[in-house]
Length: 226
Ligand code: ADP
Ligand code: ADP
Image 1: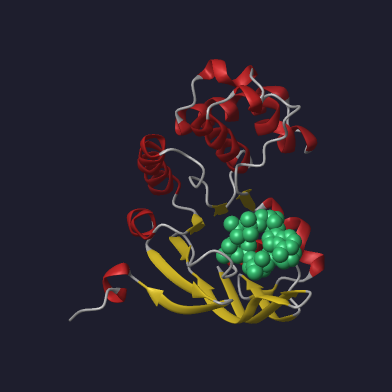
Image 2: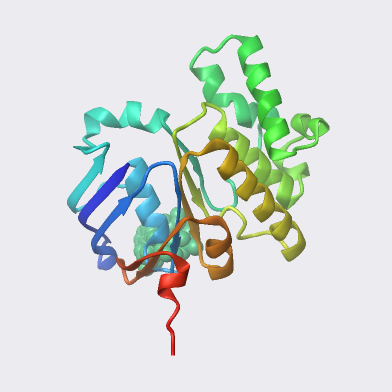
């Protein structure tokens, strides 16, 4: 789906990505794991084109992801930033449907899609008319996920989607995410710093350190054997 070749990105003096090369397989969940500051969020931003690489190449479907291709490519991607990134002055419903409304979907189509997503994410329907400040952490992340899924993207980029949740809610949402990934069969790139979570949710794990992908594979292949 994606191929990254020798990607370098620095913020001033700080190298966030340092010659990173990686393939992201289609219709599978890839977890990016590694310590804070190793470049995971930056890598997601490069994939969706929010951040341009200083050097290297990003290929989508085998062809360079040029600025001219970006608007179309972005419509194929759903993105959940850390803490969800919901707009605080919009209700949950308006957050979720913003992009579809902007694209001019008819009201009935938006409402039918919303119904599907409420079912998929197990969001209580009465939550839709509340504002993000009135939602629990788990509800907030469900709405963020609904917003990312609204246009039925082929690619889902999730940056620590469960990072800020307490352990009970986190474990419940891990189960739900696993079901959602299995039901949708999309290309998912999931950032986490939690190895058990990566092992539970992902088909493939990419271990990052200091702006590079240092190891890629199945968890079983990564565990050191005595
Ligand atoms: P992460 O959990 O991905 O490490 P951070 O807490 O480091 O996230 O970053 C949160 C936000 O602050 C991001 O939007 C990131 O781009 C920005 N940020 C991170 N480090 C710096 C920095 N050294 N200078 C300015 N902005 C930064
Ligand atoms: P991770 O997601 O693995 O925590 P990030 O991609 O957020 O890592 O950050 C990688 C490095 O780049 C860190 O050193 C971070 O402080 C720095 N960084 C990230 N975003 C910014 C930013 N907007 N401005 C300056 N430095 C940043």
